[in-house]
Length: 182
Image 1 (cartoon, rainbow, N blue to C red):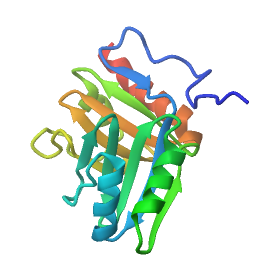
Image 2: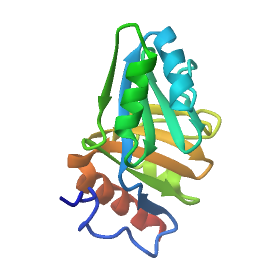
Image 3: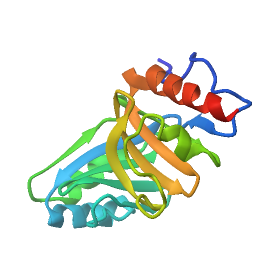
Image 4: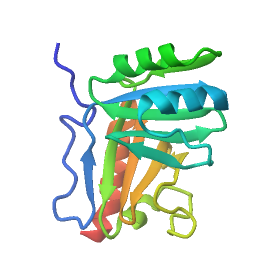
């Protein structure tokens, strides 16, 4: 059975916009919860550090760990790595923890361009100025009426994670906001 992308079949983002929204495609996504000791064990086998600094992402080797709370991280890897990541976590962590594959629930896109902050601020209440939301920062927030995880990857590039069921809403919201910058 072919896996269908959450943004497949939806209207394309305006090609004339100075902001681009590109779906990430399928990725491994694991929601991990555990103690600091468990997080240290997962860091060792996951290959990307699980930050102990609030609202920061750790990256290495094509993988990322986004800090979502004092004991919660969203682990992102390449498509098809989910089972291996779960097995590595199970083998490395002895204490109580939770590791759940959310790869079929979540979807993502990368919003980039000189006006990406302006487009996001059409529906995101955060101060996205680089002094308040620097590169590497990540958090749960809202975009319009949808909960998202927002991660600043570069000065003008953001990774947005959301539930698949909100994909049409998120893309439509961003496209409408981007029309102002066409």
